[in-house]
Image (cartoon, rainbow, N blue to C red):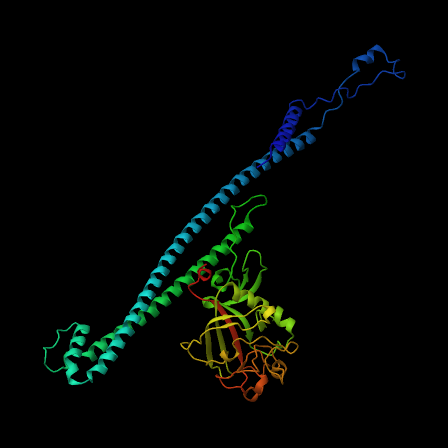
Length: 466
């Protein structure tokens, strides 16, 4: 709306021109008067009546133009005031809708937390059932061994079996009849129950994954809508203050744009970008072509190199910062030139800082459940320090493994894998030790087509939940 000084000025202009409109012939005082002086004292008395006659008035066309300009100015000021009120009303409506969306999203998040808690309780119950099942199977094994015991021990065994399965004990002195206990049928029923329980757990995990994905989509839409609304706000309009959310891992991938997420691990640390994949995985290395050479210096591996949208290595400093901020797990994704894919995973992973030469300080248990399996070709390297051609830390007295393999890596007098080796688009079947290989998948001589290293915070941590 118009400011008070502008209104006062507009009012003064209107009053002046209204007065001019009422007296169109009036001229300013003294206009057209001949001042007395030595040159006009000879004027006759008959001419004195003309002394002080008004000058010619403003012509009617000029007066009409001025009046029309004032009218147009007044109309425009009124239109601007109306538009300003309408705009403020629209902004209030937008603000109410944003509040409603935030409230709705808060309710959905609370519902998701309740569902996740329920799912965790179910998993705890499943683990308890598994423990009881293992205990029961151990008892069954012991009892099966006792069934083959001496005849004098059979009444005691029969009593224990009856107590275990809820049957009445056999009469004292009567021979033990294993068919009365129907152990096989009970084991079959137990196996059926376990299979059904495992299927229900997998189905629950899939449903939780879908819920998390839908939640991420909702958050992404809200973030984009808030950005669009902020861009449409007029100059000088201050929206309600909002707390900016800083991502600390790809578990917050709903903040990512085209798969690239800006991470800030602590409020004081520098931010950096990482590529994210589904289920919260952060890609720390990608190999898919020979566009980028991985035979690099220590400084280049320290800072990172390549293109996050193509082949790259994130950098040892960033990898150390990530694995130090929370406990992470590691996954290796491999593909050969025939399109066969294999996976290798470790339930914990961390590297040390530069003072410890970025040693592979933590490498957990190999995850045997991943399918299709690639085998374990990294445990041999656990504890090894990082090496490059210009910084040899490979525990090999007679050689430089980084120069020998034309790559950087955690070499331990060389090793069983070389994911940062030379990319061989031709002759990959006989590339030798300089190629990109994983010994338990296609062997040391076969250079792979694509390789990815991914890390993710271990589920269940407070950091991962946040």
